[in-house]
Amino acid sequence: MNIRRDFIDTPQGQLHVVTAGPAAETAMPLVMIPQMSALEQVRLMVALGERPTIAIDPLGLGDSDPVPWSQPTMADYAGVLLTALSALKIERFDLYGSHFGARAATEMAVLAPKRVRRLILDGAGHMDAAQREDLAKNYVPPIAVDQHGSQIRWSWHFVRDSFLYWPYFRREAKNSRIVGLPSAEALHDRTVHALKNVRSLDKNFRAAFEYPTDEKLPQVACPTLLGRLDAACAALIPKTVQTDHDFYDSAESDDAAVDAWASSIASFLDNS
Image 1 (tube, rainbow, N blue to C red):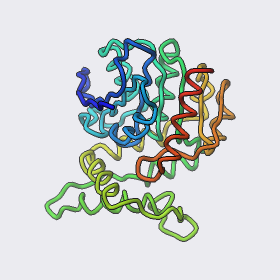
Image 2: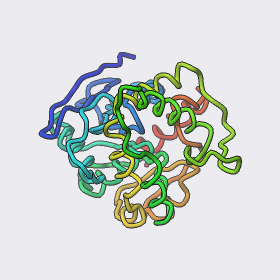
Image 3: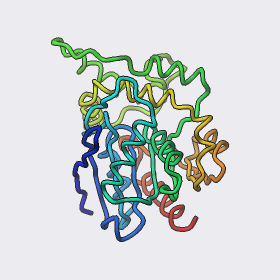
Image 4: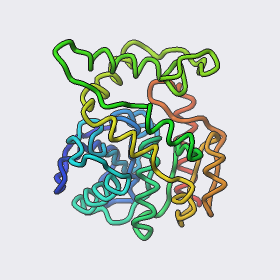
C-alpha cells in the first residue's frame, strides 16, 4: 500500500498528514487522530486495506507545528483539525482517535455532529476529577531545553518508563504494567517524537487530562466503537459497541492484535 505524507495549512499552523488507500472522494474516509504521531497509525492503516484513511497530527504532536496557545483546550485542537479537513474538502467522515487523539476525536464529534458519521475511541480514558487533576499536574511538567541536553534525557525516560509504569512518574511496584519494553527501534522512534515536541508536550497532555469526559462523552450522538478497557466510557455514550480488544499500540500490539482491531473497525463502519 502506498503511504503518502503531506502538510495542510491552517490559520494556526501547518498540520502533518499521512494518507493511505484510495482517494477520499471514492468512499467514506476514516480520519485518524493519534496519541503521539500519525506515523504510529500506519500499521493499522495498512491492516484496514483498501479504505481511504487519513491520519493527522494535531498541533504540537508528530510533525505538525507547535501549539500557538499558552493554555490550549481540547476544543482548540479539535477546531483546527476540523478546519484542516475542510481545507482537504472532507466534509463528512468516520473518525478514529487514540488516547490524546480519542479526546480530540470526542470533541470533534461534539462540535460537528453532522460531519462525524461513526466514531471509534481507543483509549478514551474516562477518569474521575481527582485522577484528571493528578495527571494534569504531574504527567508532563514544562520541559527545559538547556545546554546540558536535559530535554534528551527526560524524553528517553518519559518514553521508556511509560512502558514500565502507569502512570510513568509513579515508579513503584504496584504501578508496574508488566508488559516489558518494546524493541530498541520503537523506543528510539517514540523518543524522537517526544523530543521534537518537547516545547508543547506539557500543554498537550494538560489539555487532554483536563478534558471533562464525564460531560463530553454523553454528548456524542453518533454510533461509537470502544475497546475492552473503555467500559467506563461506553457507559456514558448513548450508542456504543464494544470490542474485546486491548488498546492498539504501534510498539506493543502484535500482528494478530492489529488485524483484530482492523477487522472490528471495518465491521463497525460497514455494517452498523
